[in-house]
Image (cartoon, rainbow, N blue to C red; front, side, top):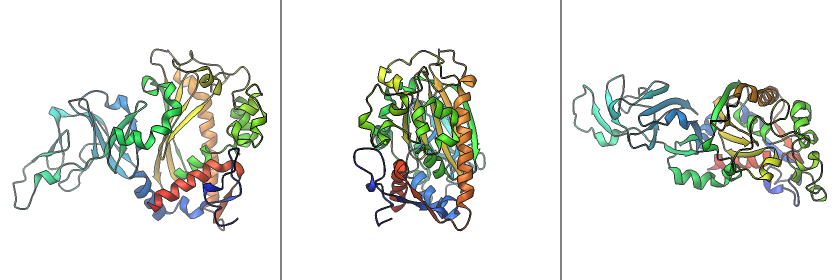
Length: 388
């Protein structure tokens, strides 16, 4: 491999693929505590991270506290209906301000249970409990530390580096364009699942961004989406894709198998086509949008599925999957989830095996092949974030 082999600039022309082999990230980056801390600081606390469903913060006065990428986050809907987000830490001596979970803001104020320091909904410090005024203390300088906050697709995102709705859209507006016809903000949760995986968060995204593993790891998925059975993700991944017209078989175009409509056990749709989808949207079978590092949404003809990615530490990751459908569709979410849950479990086992191998000496670094162009781009993104 030559000098530029680790960069996505070695992509081929005329199809999706790498022109030459590319070095993967060092194996030590997938479990080393110091490297994990670097990524939390440079990636997870510098960008937009999925935090919660909007339903948890729908009404004025609602609040939600939860851990996120090594932080304790408090989000709330103030009396005027605006979202606010803060580090969930009292400015007195660092006590937790609100207990983890959902709650209500009493009287429009937040009070620390330790020493009764009290804050307004906008984070201003209003009172210091029994503590008397003392020289050198500036109340205005001791409000809650704010986080950036925004909404998209029925989800709340926060950013430890600050920002608002416009900043979110500037950063990720292009990323979410493919899912615009699904109008995910109009869909409601019908089922959810949480699984913890013994793998680094980066391995989840690497596995998501290639299908070389699909024929061996996902037999049912490869039967439903025949192009996956060829080890590629879409028709443009084939160097000869231009020779195959739109009427070619699904294994060449990327559509679902003949007769299938959606990602279900039998391939049948569980509801009518979602309003606003074109024939092309429906025929595609699956449409993806990612908001790195923490979120993906996939749209199908009759529903959508969101996955929130949460790093729990070096070599451990939590996935929170939510199936979404029109609120009045009467869809059985548990039944709908069966197929995708199997795929998730297969991916989890593969990622855990990958993690175990990365820990085994003398493996130091891997190699990316032609079909792993998206992983090369992901690695470039990781390097760029770490380099600042």
